[in-house]
Amino acid sequence: MTVTTPEVTPGEMRRVLGTFASGVVAVTAALDGAPAGMVCQSFSSLSLEPALVTFCPGNASTSWPRIRAAGRFAVNVLAADQREICAALAGTRKFDGLDWHPGANGAPLLPGALAWIEADLTAVLPGGDHSIAIGAVTALTAERDADPLLFFRSAYGRMA
Image (cartoon, rainbow, N blue to C red):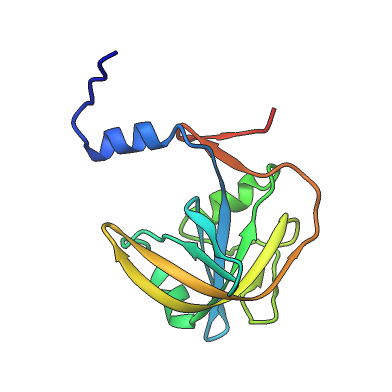
C-alpha cells in the first residue's frame, strides 16, 4: 500500500490533527486584581514527580501576556455543559457575567468545572506560532462527575 502525503500546510495540519479529540480547558490568572483567561485544547500533564503541567498558548493571544505576567495560573477542566463559558473566554468580553472565585493562588476558578489545577509558571519555551508554558502544580482537585467538553474535527463533541 502506498500512502500519498499532501503538502504540509497550516490547513492540512489543522484538518489532520483535528482527528485527535482533545479536552477543552480554561486557563485563568489574576493580574493586579483583574481576571484574565483563555480557552485551550493543548493542555497536558507533563510530569508526576515533580508535579508539572503544560499548555501551549498561541503567540497572537491577547490574554497570554497577562497570564504570563501573573506568573501563576489555574487550569479549569471544562464540562460538556460549559460551552457558554468556553465561548465567553474565547471572546473579547471574557469575564463579563461569568461567575468565579479566586483559588489559593488568586487565579479564577470557574464553578462547575470538572477539575481545577493551580500552578506557578516555571518555564516558557518557543514553539513556532505558539509558546510552551510549563507550570509547577501547587494545588488541584476534581470535584464534579460529568462528561468533559471535547473538541473534535473543529467542532464540540460528546462522549458516546
